[in-house]
Image 1 (cartoon, helix red, strand yellow):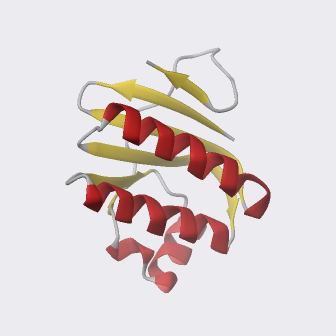
Image 2 (cartoon, one colour):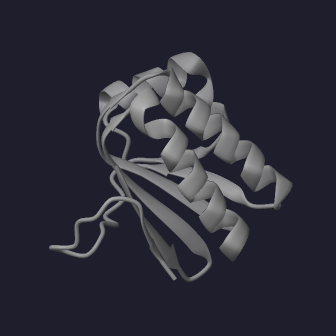
Image 3 (cartoon, rainbow, N blue to C red):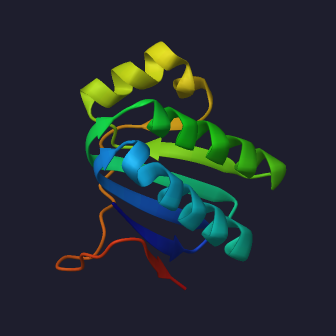
Length: 119
């Protein structure tokens, strides 16, 4: 699941749970809509709460990387757990985005929703 938050000059997507084929399509649509609507220079995918990722997650990263290139922006991946960093490295997805570990950016306390798009 995810929370999408518009911030000054960036769009942050807080991912949680499993990033697999069951959730990837809806998530792609939500992120793409938000990017096309806001045209942020930076999109951040925060993996801090992701427990599992399959090839659909790699596809999600690849597609958002291409989308951001089209708009002249950049994609960043924040807080990927060690097992996700390994998948990113093995797949080459670590070459598609800036990866930052230990970023202290989290959604507001007590705020939990699926695919929330804050304008």
